[in-house]
Image (cartoon, rainbow, N blue to C red; front, top):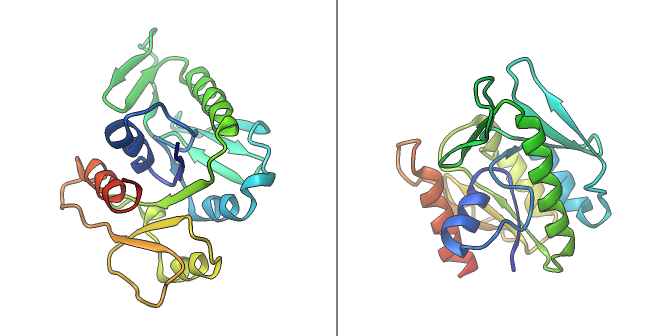
Length: 193
């Protein structure tokens, strides 16, 4: 079973819509910045994923911060003071105690991940444009220099000089809605099927 470490929601769509299995890691339905992903790639086997804190920003958005080095921004898990019960709207979740929900899901998915003996597959992908998920040329070069065979990058153009990373074009249409599911299917079809 694939152990997908994704920097965006694309990982969740791959599990839900393409592989159609339970989530094997906590790296779904969130955003993970480049520095965190880079640290994950280089240190995955040595990280204590159970050593974490939950962080709340001024807008009541929450993140899990692992070992003070890796931040998972839970952009689809939202605080709603009127939601006394967990409310699901597609991939978004609303709850007036959303931090409890985030911690519960994180803990369960970390346990699954730690019991999954597959090698991690690192996916840098997003079908639309939050700036922190679009890779720069320099970042692609850093990933290429790692010389790992388990990195997939969705890019705006294919760079033939980067032979140590798998690349696919990320352009999946101009509309924000639906871009990530289309990109997830494309990655699944090209690399995981």
